[in-house]
Image (cartoon, rainbow, N blue to C red; front, side, top):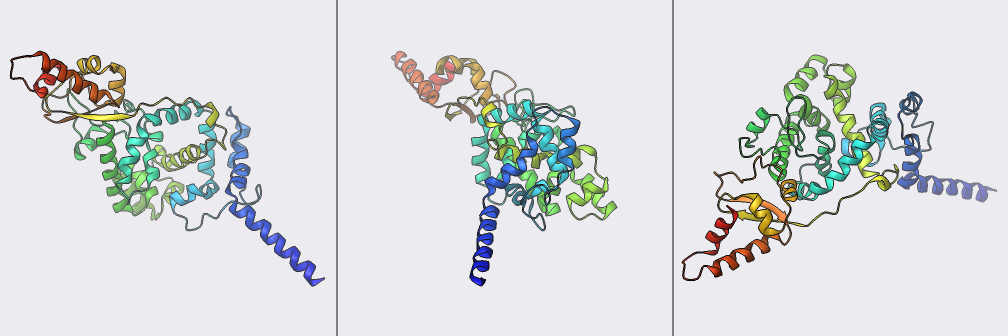
Length: 350
């Protein structure tokens, strides 16, 4: 009899262990509350009143959990605010989310390469443009913030991003990403919390710091509940958590099949030792002007800045070799003239 009871106990433990470690089972169970495609009052009420300990079999504890770890194991969904924005983004904001994920394909590989060089920064932050700009480098906010990372002019100047008649480096994929990483690192060193750093990225370090001092709050979530933050800043962290969960669980949330992912060209870079007209580059390289502008959104004109003597232009893979070949061909035609390939290319591109 004891043997039978022990067997039953061990079986129950084995089943429980299987359930605990099968994240897919629990993800599906949790995500079943996000099936709506159209926003309804009843739907949002169901999501906000969801009880993680009573309505599903298991959801990991949130106690003492780091922010990005809580997103990975979905325990952040214990927070009503995060569930609320998952629901909103999958209903009212569904088209925005789909466009943003599709656009991310153009730039995310470049951004991820840059983040890989900064091991002290969570790689998940590479997806912050989902919230900031929908991965549109030409996005301009109501407050005139610009680019993937939505920098105001004053902030961009502090981060050494150039903005003038020729160029707006807030739209430069590489330079703006490096600047965003520097900015996020500085904010993290101030607050020692990625949630607070993110809130400060949106609302400013001064605003967050003063709110903490005024309320005595030690964490972002305490600060949010205090009501001391501006509405947009209070919503910023749960919105980002919601978008990360959606991005990382596109298939389970039945979003993946709705996406039309673009066919992406592999890219290369060419260093231009003199200013160049990108219309001419387009013609000579066989690359459309639209593609050149898509890959180099920082350019305000069809000309690279005249003050740069080593400007890096991004091209579809193979275009660099075509340009070099055209220069060689033109140089060979200049029989009897002492003209270098570099000078010939300069003449062709201007």
